[in-house]
Length: 258
Image (cartoon, rainbow, N blue to C red; front, side):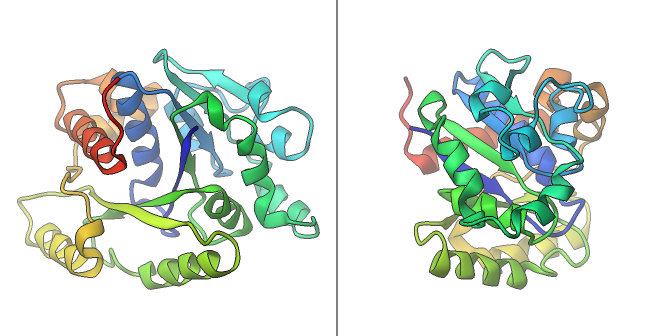
């Protein structure tokens, strides 16, 4: 039975999609069965996994529209145990189309329930907003992973995000919890990055992953080649950091080696 995680931050440019793609790929590299659901209309996670969102046979919008099942929309990625459901720009229209649906907050949850036994982990890459799509992801998820960049205003909006999580817990998904917070784009040479790390540690305490994702050119380059960084340059600091994060994540889930 898959554990489902929403990767969320309503700010753009914080490493949300990068974390979704690279954490999933790192887990697949150590023989875990992982599905990435690209729930962002921009479809960047899809591109980062070398899937052409414009020509993919099926996508998550087709699933929401009832044209295909979730199982039919799944695409095999380069790594043998890594799979994805493509995003599509039409997801923006889904925001409007879902508003009048009965049980609109649970549509994604119901769709994912059909394939939960097929994977160990499902990661939902959420749009950079606290929208109905994001609420659907939170309703479906067991846990939330929050990437926060080591930049100015890193914690801006985080209180709004936490308020939204508490609201979802009260009204939609009482079992939802923050699984972990990961600091991204960290530059140990700057006072700013160190200050942000201290601020995030003070705000989230034990929820902060010890693994920190450094600012790394290989991480930035990899999406343009349609690859997770570990397939682009396994020896890079970025790839090694995400592999370390994957192991820390597994320890937190208390998932034993097979």
